[in-house]
Image (cartoon, rainbow over all chains, first blue to last red; front, side, top):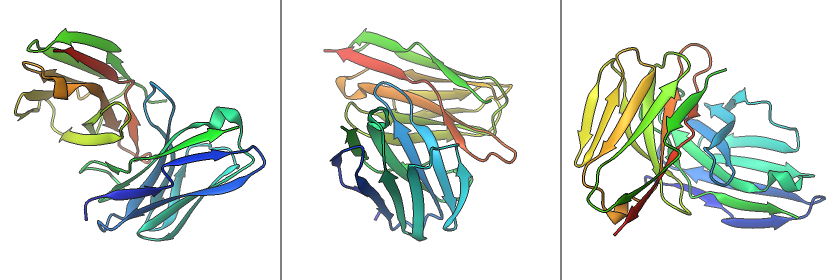
Length: 114
Length: 112
């Protein structure tokens, strides 16, 4: 299995809702990442997990809460989002914390906040 | 902070023409990686360059890493419509940061 699977593919949520994005990989990668990508922009790093521990938080607002229950799963809990948070949320994994062999990205969750 | 700039932002070519995108970092990189993102898709890893002055080829694609490890280029020979997409370089910075910073990207359009 050489894929990163993200669910759901699309999500529409109100500003008072709570929702979660899920990401799963079975490649044995020990580093996992959340990225945010706005239209026509590069992916922006949000969080890095290494061996199930949070190693980098790129000053992301607390309305985004990551969780890594085990080495194969990564969640992103969303609460009280703003319309400007609408974007493509990409999960990725890599073989090592230093991604010397490239990241494998999931197909993303397209989030719309209304 | 680290910044990775790419030029051009957009390139439109006729099928069969060559294409080059250039990537520049404000500071020295440990390595550089290249990704392709098709319209509506997600980034897909193409290649990694590690050594100063390194050149790697993948069929019609040629990747170079600068001698000072601060710049890189991707050259596509005889473009095809399947080459359409946004090409991102991504720099890995050494030290404690250990993170990949994506360049601004170049969108390639190929007219048949």
